[in-house]
Length: 66
Image (cartoon, rainbow, N blue to C red; front, side, top):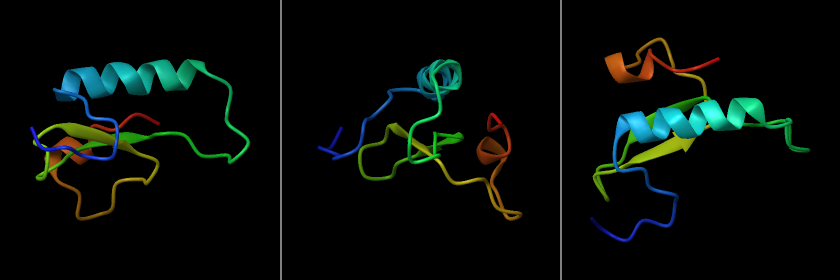
């Protein structure tokens, strides 16, 4: 894996477990929390994003948590 500056999860399952943990935490002052995971071509891992999946989302993006 490459050195990515973001938190890297080794699998989609690990990223989804992190999303579930964030859902149990109070909403941060920024009002944003991670909503979905996406694969990173640089590090070949997974990262979390607070962006909602777009209408042109790939299959893995459509399985995001709300």
